[in-house]
Image (cartoon, rainbow, N blue to C red; front, side):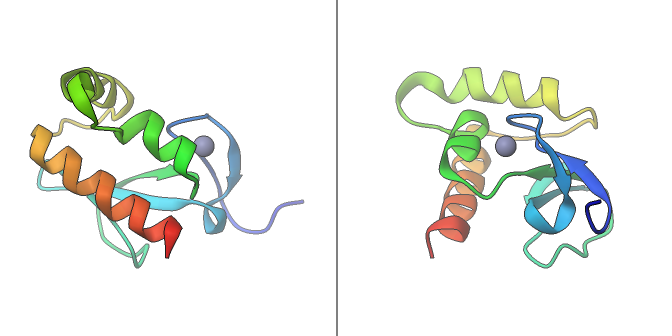
Length: 99
Ligand SMILES: [Zn+2]
């Protein structure tokens, strides 16, 4: 039995304890990285590895718009997000797993 509450990675759909995942949260229609896993709002989870992060948030070259559209399909909550914010979020998540 896994300890704690199970959550699904938004990227690979793996189900695991939320302790093993990074948390994102929607606050005031903005998707942000919840580094303390305590922010109020609808939460989403992603594996702490580069492939899962890149699959959802990779913003290199001309993929930005495609990634935004994909992300809005995954995140069921209404969000306002620009390509600039997507880029920033990608940077924060990658920094978290490469530190
Ligand atoms: Zn994953």
